[in-house]
Image 1 (cartoon, rainbow, N blue to C red):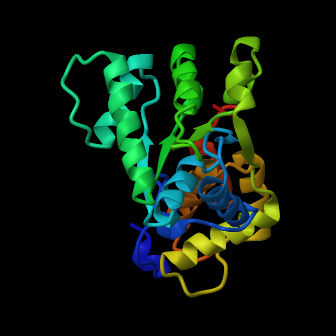
Image 2 (cartoon, rainbow, N blue to C red; image 1 turned 45 degrees about the vertical axis):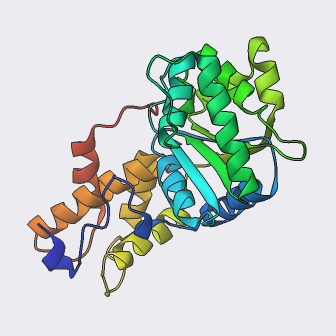
Length: 273
């Protein structure tokens, strides 16, 4: 609705991940580079944690695009699978010819054979698990067992867990000690501070085609920072509603009035969720 008003080619603040809008400031770019290095040069499980709306899924999608062509990616977006089902899911993603209702030992054997074949071809297999905090305890135990798959010289499967801070609490439990010890890299996505938010908003606007001066005033930035708690999903929602408020008022600047109207319409809870 407001695209032409602001000279935009597309909406700048969609909440669905769009990798062209990946913001590499606020240590996001450095985290991505470190993730790629950890996956391609190290062994062990990698963990990425952050609050709801902090940008974990966006980071995961960009990671999938930036990993080398020699990496076969298995992406699991629904981790609330049973211990057996996660094996079938990985086998399905790798297009293994496993008969339905096969025993899990048979699936595991077929999986190991495929991984050995990939290793012999110089290919690496990486499993990216989104929302890993929602995994049942038995499924997490299966993840630990999968991390044991190896050749004489190297691990055959790299695992990356993306989850909310609750994942850290789960891994701190005594029954999760063996899995936690296999995690060799831990990355955390911190909320954006006010200066980062200003750069983030400007970056998203220009990625969408905007060519003018910054539309977000300092008072608006202060309000957005306070209400969003620095979480990118909240920032996107407030910014989108602020642009709509400015368009409705016939303005090309977003001040405190527009930001307050947007925040009031959002009705965020006090806690993150």
